[in-house]
Figure 1 (tube, rainbow, N blue to C red):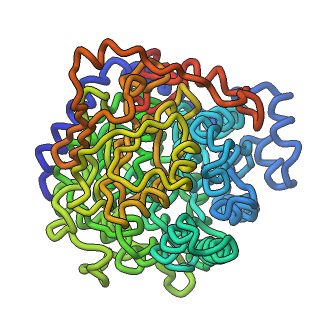
Figure 2 (figure 1 turned 180 degrees about the vertical axis):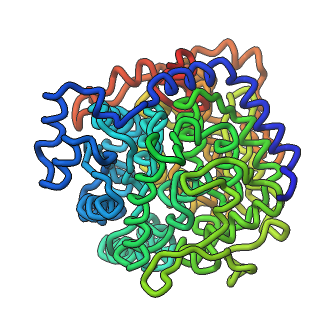
Amino acid sequence: MTPLHPKIQEVTARIEARSKDTRDAYLEMIRSRRPTAYARTRLHEGNIAHASAGCAVIEKAQILGAGWPVIGIVTSYNDMLSAHAPFESYPQLLREAAREVKAVAQVAGGVPAMCDGVTQGQEGMELSLFSRDVIAMASAIGLSHDSFDAALHLGVCDKIVPGLVIAALRFGWLPSIFVPAGPMPSGLPNPEKVRIRQLFAEGKVGRDALLKAEAESYHSQGTCTFYGTANSNQMLMEVMGLHLPGAAFTNPGTPLRTALTRAAAHRAAAITAQGADYRPAGELIDARSIVNALVGLMATGGSTNHVLHIPAMAAAAGYTVTLEDFADVSAVTPLMARIYPNGPADVNHFHAAGGMSFLVSSLLKAGLLNGSARGVAGDISQYGREPYLQDGALAWRDAPATSSDTEVLRPAEDGFSADGGLRLLEGPLGRGVCKVSAVKPQHRRIEAPALVFDSQEALKAAFEAGRLDRDFVAVVRFQGPAANGMPELHSLSPALGVLQDRGHKVALVTDGRMSGASGKVPSAIHISPEAARGGPLARVRDGDIIRLDADAGELALLVDPSEFAARSPAEFRPNRSPMGLGREMFDMMRNVVSPAEAGGSPFSFTQAAG
């Protein structure tokens, strides 16, 4: 095995060192719950009877007789979210597969699954980030029946997978396997979709043309094909070892997808505490797994939303991850993939070029991925394989030796760039990140007057009124987790993209976040401390000169420091109406949420692990 890169070793070691006490407390908690027999044997007879009452005759007999392990299914099925619609048939498929290996599979519970595509730019988006934590809590309710010996988590999209991971780790004595559904077939090419969006933003095409383009892009069951948060999730689950190898990007409804789904149930039954290969999620996921997630994110140019989700997931296992960890891993990890918004190809093209097996294999050879980390199917060193059907049976083979399309996927030694394209930005306005993998080099340094907006609607109104045809840095504040739940600001992308294409120097600075689909405009996002909690963005005024230098990691304010410090901060005014769409029910989360760089989470696992 290739020796691990010194910087990867360093980041892993410092995560372990800073997290020692909270990780030890976490391990003590989950080990105290390790079962000595099937989990349901701890329950009273009445409890067991209730647990079996809804089952088919065969499963009921085995639960009552304590003869087979029980696998709990946590499903995020709904049929308005295309990526999750295929899950409708999964419970029955998993029950049948479990029965083949003498196990019972039961749906432990369902969790909400919000579609950010539906809520993008709408008020409902204010619930998006916190839905991750609701999903974690809903999963906990399902698993709290405490009658399961393993768990299967059915999830794909943005906040759903991180929420399921948080729950899987808080129930870390249980083995957990994540079961995806795969991307929809390719539709309208992503660059063409963006072109139509920008034409619509300029008033050059009507709503009919826009709707036609959108419907041709998002056209069937499966994940959206751009490389946003949903598909970044699938990559992460693979490099962290929570998938079976090669499960991420096989299309829904195919024989191979069905075989992989059945195999997940088979494997879950094999890794319970009663078997010979116990793989509890909380011990399987460790600092090596977390750094592998960072490497995978950088190597593929993945979603900036994972700058929120990885720290939140890590905290659930007792670890603290910082922005410096992201930046240091990014600096030594080459960008190996060009998937939209980092290039014209979609995730199906990536998969066809060699996909996850090629990516993992190349990163292992380069000493960037830690092959000694554990996965549900073996060590990560065994994840450089791809699944296929041999005479109708599922099998795995070695990754292709070369990429079949080097415009989409390249080996680590010949990446598209020497680093992963995520920059830590610091300065008098705070700390945040900038994803530059989709930003052309000539746009990575902007120095221009600030135009300040307290909402994304105000910026869009200014654009539509023709007031933004100039060089400027858009400061969109009061968009952090404590202000309004940190909605994605992706709906600003068409307007800012139009202005950039007109030759203006434009950039975005915000305490909010962007979609994983956002790309070409330089954006300093997740700025902490956020304006609603007194952060410096609250004192920025129109005309202040801001310099965003992504390559240098600089977010400078060219204003006299003493004059800036003496300013009164702008008053944070909550949503025009704090009522409606259930937003008022999330006040408790906004009041206690951690800063964005700590994950934007209402939980405090690393302060009180266990």
